[in-house]
Amino acid sequence: MKKTLLTMTLLFGCFLMASAQLPSVTLKSMDGKTVKTDTLSNNGKPFIIDFFATWCKPCNRELTAISEVYEDWQKETGVKVIAVSIDQAQNINKVKPLVDNHGWPYEVLLDPNSEFKRALGIQMIPYTLIVDGKGKIVYKHNGYADGAEEELIEKVRELIAAE
Image (cartoon, rainbow, N blue to C red):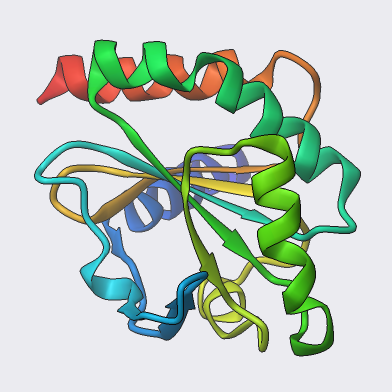
C-alpha cells in the first residue's frame, strides 16, 4: 500500500511538474531591456533556461560545454538557450565580461534579486529547465557533470519527436 501511494504521489508530482507554466517575473536583459519571464518563447519550439552565476564554476563549465555544440543543436532542433544570471546587484557588472570572454551565444537575462529563481523553487545552481513550445516546463535538472549536456539535448529530441 505504501509503495502504491508513493508511486502515485511521484506520478502526480511528475504530472504537476510537466504542466507547470513559467512564473511571471520582470527581469532585464544585458542591454537593459525589460523581459517578462512568462512571455519567454522560441516561436513554438522548445527552449532551455539555464540559471548560473559568474562565481559558479560548474555553471560556467556547463554553459561553455553547451556553447561548443549549440550551433549543431540549433540546426538539428531549433532549440534556444536562455541563460539567467543570479549574480547580485553588486556583481552584475561581471556578467557581460564573463559572457563575452566565453563567447556564449545565448540570450542572457539578469535576476539580481533571485525573484525568478525563487518563483521556480530553485535552491542551487546550476539549474536547467526545458520548456516546450507551448511554454510548459517539461524537464528540470540540478547540477552539472561533464557530458550532462548530452542528456539535455536528448530530452529536447524526445520532446520534439513527441510533438
